Amino acid sequence: MLSIQSLTKTFGQNTAVDRATIQVDGPCMIGIIGRSGAGKSTLLRMLNRLTDSSSGQVLFEGRDITALNGAAKRQWQSQCAMIFQQFNLVPRMDVVSNVLHGTLNRRSTLSTMFNLFPKADIHRAIDILDRLGIAEHAPKRAEALSGGQQQRVAIARALMQDPAIILADEPIASLDPMNAQIVMDALRRIHDEDGRTVIANLHTLDTARRYCDRVIGMRDGRIVFDGLPDQLTTDVAREIYGAGADFSEAATSTAIEALDPSTDAAWATA
Image 1: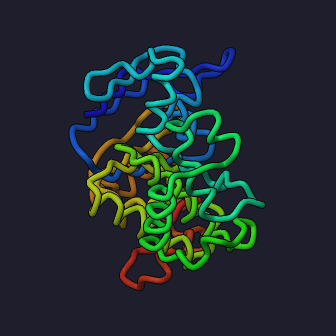
Image 2: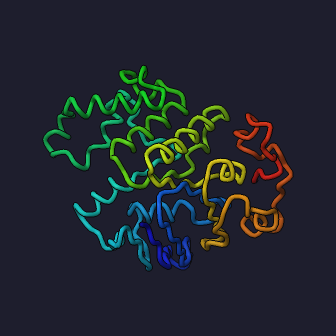
C-alpha cells in the first residue's frame, strides 16, 4: 500500500530526516513519537508533498509520489489529507464553508472564486460534521468555536477529500485533556469505521499506546523504533527520547490518560 524508502530531507548541513524506511501493507493507525526536532513533522510533510524530499522515494500502490508534479501532485494531496496542530481554518468563514474547502482540488477556478458549492457537497459536509458531533455549529464562524471544535472541523475538511490516508501533525498538542480525548477518539473511529490509514505525530507515549496499532519512534531524524505499542518498554523509550528523559513525571502527560485511571502515568513524556 504505502512504501517509504530511504526518505531523506536535508536543510543545508542539517539532516531533518535521515533515510526513513517504513512499509505499510494495509490500513492501520500509526503513531509517530519523539522529541521536538526529531523529524516527525518533516516526515509527514514529505509524505503529503508539502515539502520535497532530498532523496529517497514514497510509493503508494506502486506509484512514485515523490515524482509527481502539477495536477498529479494536487490529486495526491487530496488522497493524503493533512491535519495541522493549529487547525489552518479560515477564521471568519463559517464552519461548513471551511469543511467544503476540502473539495477545492477538484473544483473549477470559477466556482472557487465565487465560493459556489453543489448541494450534494453541502449536504455531505453537514453529514460529516454531524458524525463528528458539531453539526449545530455549521453556520457559525470558525473563530467562534473552541480549539477542540475547530480541530474537529479540520478533520471534517480532511474527510471531505475522501482520502485514503490522513496525516495528523500533533493534532492534540494545543488542546485541553477532554478535547484531546474527543479528537483522538474521532481519529480512531475514522480508521475503524472507514478503513482509512491514519498516521499521527503524537506528543506522549501514553496516547500512542492507547490509540495506535503501531508506533514509530524517531530520534535526530532517524527511525529508532518501529513496533507494537506493548513493545514500548522503558529502555526503548529512553532510546527514543534520550537517556536523561524522565518517564516517572506524571505532570508531563497530555492528561488524556488522567481521564482513564487504568493508564500508566509512568509512560508520560517530557
